[in-house]
Image (cartoon, rainbow, N blue to C red; front, top):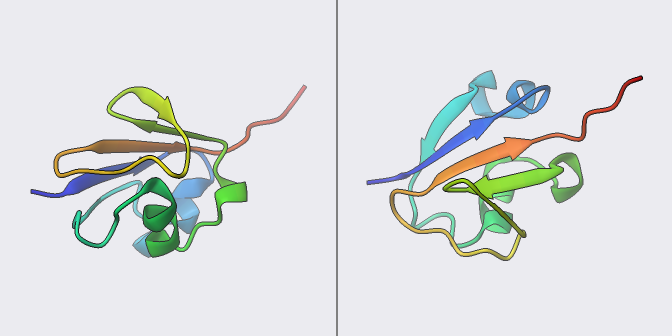
Length: 77
């Protein structure tokens, strides 16, 4: 089993292969911060991280079967 990752907004363009959704092996990503590094994203690029529907911080541990959603800061007027 793996960790499913889905990116919203312009973060999709920064994901490997510009995929909106992909899977990562849990052994590679111990925490959200590890996951962001694997994906080539900086913490400052990601405004909200949700794991299984709950907002979490970068030090949140990840486990097999988790669903991670990444949201960028959105601005406008």
